[in-house]
Amino acid sequence: MKRRNFVKLGILSSASLSLYAKEKSSVHFYKAFTQALLIPPLAKASVLKDGTKEFNLNLQEGEVSFLQGAKTKTYGINGNFLGPTIKVERNDSIKINVKNSLKEESVIHWHGLHLEGHNDGGPNRSIKKNTSWSTTFKIQQRAATYWYHPHTHKKTGEQTYKGLAGLFIIEDEDSKKANLPKEYGVDDIPLIIQDRRFDKNANFVYKYSMHDEMMGVKGKVFLVNGVNAPYVDVSAKTIRLRILNGSNARFYSLVFSNNQDFFQIAGDASFLEKPLKIKKLLLAPGERAEILVDVSTLKNTSIYLGDSLSNKALLKINIKNEKKQNFILPSRLTTINEYSNITKEKALRIRHFSLDMRMMWMGINAKQMDMSYINEKVILGETEIWRIKNNNEMPHPFHIHGCSFKVLSRNNKGIFSNETGLKDTVVVYGEETLDLLVRFNYKASKEFPFMYHCHILEHEDAGMMGQFTVEEKK
Ligand code: C2O
Ligand code: CU
Ligand code: CU
Image 1 (cartoon, rainbow, N blue to C red):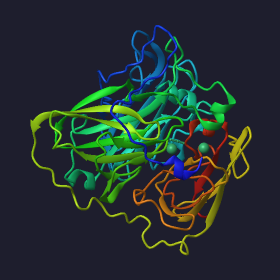
Image 2 (image 1 turned 30 degrees about the vertical axis):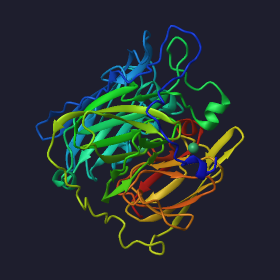
Image 3 (image 1 turned 90 degrees about the horizontal axis):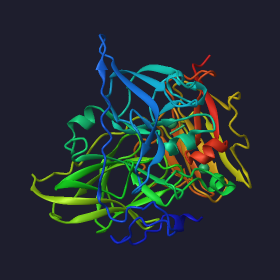
Image 4 (image 1 turned 60 degrees about the vertical axis):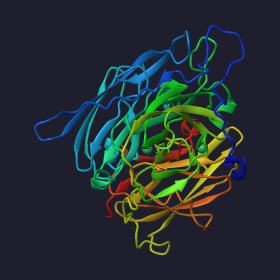
């Protein structure tokens, strides 16, 4: 698929609803946006004597009525589907207890977090069924919307599909002092966007063909926070949406049905320095963005958040008639200084990665993920360029554990205006070469190494992944 086609903006009409199966069955897809959007609850922390905030996550089986008149078997975290939002601040010490009440092994990875490899929840950290894993670490990174999901060897795709995922929100000095909507679930609304397919009994249909493995599993039913065709009521003012593409393989180009402008204020792992005015937002699996949407002039009307790639509406936004004070858009949100002064010449080395995909085979640097093989050895604190070359036509969202990186160039030229902040997942389009500035400030041993991989979860599970250690210079 050529990039030109891939990012092409379709015209979204509010009539383009989530219609799917034409076959006769007892299961009905919601055709109107009549279900209220669920807001993932904030995870409750208990504060230990030394001030550590302790969270408990329980991976469990569940059942949800996504479709009318039928129940779907699911996985969830402290609930039936998805998990609570963990919300913490920079410098917090936290402890998370992950209990696995499933009938199979699993593990939870903290996507985007800076921590040592043994805390990272990679595949080497497998939690056997009926056992628990406790991890303690300090939050030492920027405010942004991160997330957590399973990283089980060869089962990440399937377990995420069933419902294991949640948000991990970090606040810092910049985010606390910024004049932004901050009321969680009210004007600061988290949106986990996913797609699913169902059989005629309303069960999830995960991978069943080679095509699914090569292209990734995509469904025609869209869920937002686990709700099909939801609506949300908001005041007539500027609202903030924290959006996670939590899909296994689907890319979205998010637009509003009235084609209005909005401002992107944050990407994966930081604010943008300044709000960026846009009309559409491309999000690949694993990527996040925060946006501000001014609906102050739309009292008593509704708009839809939609996807211009599939031409489907995802969420109906009803704007209520409450008068709210005027909002002044911040002119500056932060300063990104992590990689300032580092140019191509100053990076210590260039490390090469090629994303390889042939008929029925995929890997990185001609190798497939092997749990017993360390692909790369990185030195703690050294800045490097990771040069990612996509050797095929299909775009791959490349993700690195244990760091936030800066996109330096695409094909030796400029980068997109919304990827100027820090990121941890970035799309490498067909035949493209990206240079990323990376630096790891936390160690990872060969027992618990970090991963880099494609975030199309079927590609990850099929071997488009590698492991690396981070150690002090000897
Ligand atoms: Cu979001 Cu290694 O993953
Ligand atoms: Cu990750
Ligand atoms: Cu891929």
